Amino acid sequence: MSRIEGAFTYNTSAQITAVGSYLPEKVLSNADLEKMVETTDEWIVQRTGISERRIAADKEFTSDLCFAAVRNMAEEYQVELGDVDYIIVATTTPDTFFPQMAARVQAEFGIAHCGAVDVQAACAGFAAALQLAGGLIATGMHRKILVIGAEALSKITDYTDRTTCILFGDGAGAVLVEAGSPEEAPSWLSSIALTDGAEGHHLYRSSLAPNIGDMALEQNGFIVQNGRAVYRWAISRVPEGIRQFMKQAGITAEDVDWLVPHNPNMRILEAVCERTGIPLEKTVSTLAYTGNTSAASIPIALHQAVRDGRIRSGQLLMLYGFGGGLSQAGLLLRWAL
Ligand SMILES: CC(C)(COP(=O)(O)OP(=O)(O)OC[C@H]1O[C@@H](n2cnc3c(N)ncnc32)[C@H](O)[C@@H]1OP(=O)(O)O)[C@@H](O)C(=O)NCCC(=O)NCCS
Image 1 (cartoon, protein in one colour):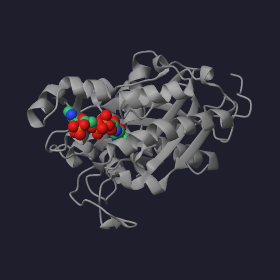
Image 2 (cartoon, protein in one colour; image 1 turned 30 degrees about the vertical axis):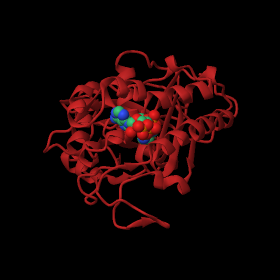
Image 3 (spheres, protein in one colour; image 1 turned 90 degrees about the horizontal axis):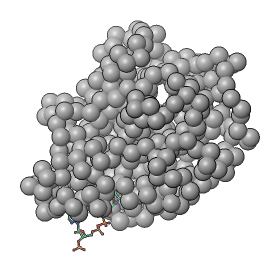
């Protein structure tokens, strides 16, 4: 496999060797939402592209979604988990702030010697966690890292707020990132991380502090967003970020076989594609049946496209997360599975 000129900000042998996912059984359709708030299926589909989303059961939490995604991955790829040496879980909806979800995963699978951390970067979380995994492998400190994106967003969604509750769903995805041999063609090609922290108050869930800077927060425990502001940011700063990333990596839109982006809303994805030159047909979206699953959306989409044969070994993939923060995290991979 030839290297892409100038593409390498990474020097790591990391590669994804297995992928899995899990969606909870319960379906929340647009018709169900019509009975809960003043909305219509037509309005939701037209504004978001979402028809239904999966919702965790009352006693099902993010840790359960993590376990199910890892089990799915281990069964599908027949992988051994006993020698995993690090676990990273990207989530904004941990069952408990501590113990962290990664420690729950370690206990569930009886992994003997491993580090365990949660990463909190909202919808950019999974791509950020993969960047960290690539870095840990590059240092030689770790060789087999389990990276999970999981969310039970229904637990923090206000089902009386019609502009927000139509968007979100639950789910989880997991990948195994392993050190390859130096002779193999590199899989991790390039990465980018961008943050507009001054815009963070447009999308938040309050915690300990009553405000961000001078701005008082609604402290209802739910996702709060200024939909229009987030939308404007997503269709301007995200395409800018992707264009910057392609330039930095020395590639053009034509080189990208698949864009696997965070899936917030179809209109946002259409605008991102139009403004970056990456065709919508080369974009993996599960929005219609998952809604926005934040940190879980990239691994769920990745697993779907690998399973149905769209993503194949040797293709160039751009994984691109963006959202709360407001942050962006991108990774360019030569798919090696
Ligand atoms: C939330 C979002 C779909 C709303 O779409 P929009 O076109 O911006 O809608 P607006 O907020 O301008 O509202 C337009 C009208 O529709 C109404 N409306 C809002 N939600 C509605 C719903 N579910 N059903 C019917 N009408 C609705 C509004 O009340 C408003 O009515 P008005 O004109 O009488 O005041 C859109 O702003 C969006 O996608 N934002 C990004 C959110 C996001 O993706 N967040 C996560 C990022 S990771």
